[in-house]
Image (cartoon, rainbow, N blue to C red; front, side):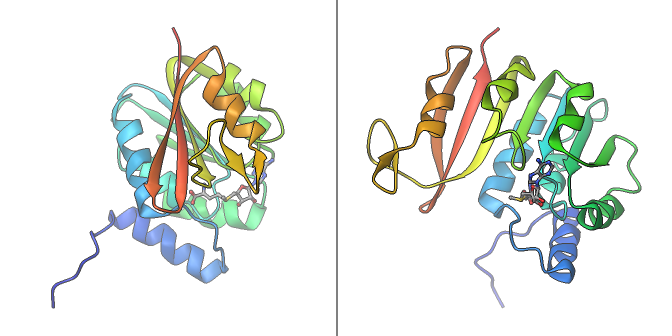
Length: 190
Ligand SMILES: C[S@@+](CC[C@H](N)C(=O)[O-])C[C@H]1O[C@@H](n2cnc3c(N)ncnc32)[C@H](O)[C@@H]1O
């Protein structure tokens, strides 16, 4: 029977099973995941970071582009989720799944790719930018597409999105990853 869905990497499928077992419903969608894999591929010797591991779906997408010399570090404050996600990567010592607050990531900075998806994005955006290496890529998921400039959410200017899109240290844009999800992609100016 032909399918219309593109297959996902086996490790992503494993992390999706963990999400289903844990009842976790905030994993990134494959359209965002493919962007994560692409970003990791651009930095074959890089430090790839993620705040908010969840069950490891985004981590697995980042892993799909991970170079042999690269490292991937992710952090999750929910200890049970972190434990389950760590199991998905137990065979690969390039990957570290940390348990605790997103600021634990700081000891691994600067980041060549930072998928900021749980902690940092809203509570300390300036620090998020500081943690990027020159040329480092920042990916921020889960915005609502807006035809306006400045971008709006719920009829108000979306100040957080505006912060990232206009930050002087970033060259940033917004892409529609699905018709309903917009993702900010930025590179730190050298
Ligand atoms: C949107 S989900 C992450 C989804 C995951 N990145 C993916 O793509 O599949 C956000 C996660 O961030 C975690 N989180 C929220 N605030 C955090 C913080 N300050 N430090 C660490 N983790 C945090 C939540 O527990 C939740 O599991």
